[in-house]
Amino acid sequence: MIYMDHSATSPVDPKVFEAMKPYFTNEFGNASTLYSLGRNAKNAMESARQEVATIIGADPKEIIFTSGGTESDNIAILGTARKLKNKGNHIITSDIEHPAVEETCKYLEKNGYKITYLPVYKEGIVRVKDLEDAITDETILITIMHANNEIGTIQPIAEIGKIANERGIYFHTDAVQTVGKIPVNVIEMNVDMLSLSSHKLYGPKGIGALYIKKGVRIEPLMYGGGHERGFRPGTENIPGIVGLGKACSIANQNIEDNARKLTNLRNKLIDAVLEQNKDSYLNGHRTKRLPNNANFRFDAIEGESLILHLDFKGIAASTGSACSSTKLEASHVLLAIGLEKEEAHGSLRISLGIENTEEDIDYAITAIKEVVEKLRKMSPLWCGTI
Ligand SMILES: *Cc1c(COP(=O)(O)O)cnc(C)c1O
Image 1 (spheres, protein in one colour):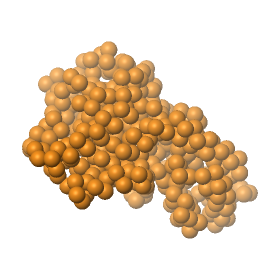
Image 2 (spheres, rainbow, N blue to C red; image 1 turned 90 degrees about the vertical axis):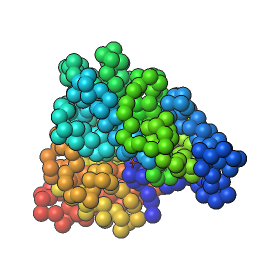
Image 3 (cartoon, rainbow, N blue to C red; image 1 turned 180 degrees about the vertical axis):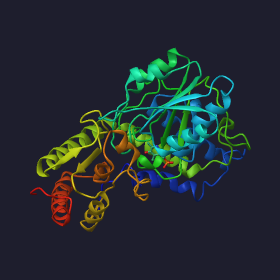
Image 4 (cartoon, protein in one colour; image 1 turned 90 degrees about the horizontal axis):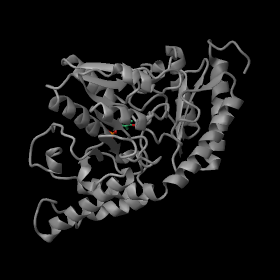
């Protein structure tokens, strides 16, 4: 099988798995205990915290381990809303957030908060002017993702952060799709909070982190033994934390080379697919996108059939996000960039990973062409020639 769905999840790097192993067996200590077994766990956790901090240019004291991107997003948004409810009730986000942000904002909307969803226009990118216009005296939080998980577009985070800073508004970004893929630096990006997740960067599932800048005050969502500065009580998932740390350190060493390699593969794929398939289009911005993301749209094709036929040919790809592809609803991201429902349903997301080769790309180009031709021959919607 050729795996091309890395925005959904990535395989665990064997070096990451090796690093985790001892913490399931001999080194099983509780990091809160005082004897050497516990201290070993604590030390492993603190080196992992350093590695996570390094990949985003933060101080280790600013890193909280969580169960993943979803939890990090929830703590940042709900934690701010609860802490600042007497200061204001307005939150600004975008139309194309991951459900972990989108649904959290909708929950707040049902509970008395006002949410502004910024448009992203045809190319899937928010405009700073719209953000400036949306800010009111009541605005307590801006939460806008770094890169989108479906169409890969990268937002002008540093500019947004600068405005948020000047206005004294907390700024959170969901950087789950970018950490480990492109350089991320919390200082340069002017962010107060940033979410990341291990399983999108060749680490294990069920572990992630939230960066909370020194001085930023939010409420915890859970109460207990005071772990993770009180933000995330509960005995720490040491094997997961060690895995995340190792994944960050590996990704950080190779970030430029990997980004270059993936960009070349992605460009080859995009150029060939658009050239070889009539009435095919690229969703999202041509260059302001993740190095590993290509999202296509084919007239008169149904995305689900495309995925299943590619699966027969040994390729794992996706329609919208993994979460929406089981719902059979049109992706809110594709609708937000102005596609009609039918157009959104004819979309294909390919997200490459570092183990993909040039041969994989050649194979995918041919497979996509064959499947598109086959489906169009069967499609009542298709009137053109192939
Ligand atoms: C995958 C993903 C999440 C959720 O992360 P989990 O660790 O699976 O909870 C959040 N945001 C984005 C952009 C994602 O791609």
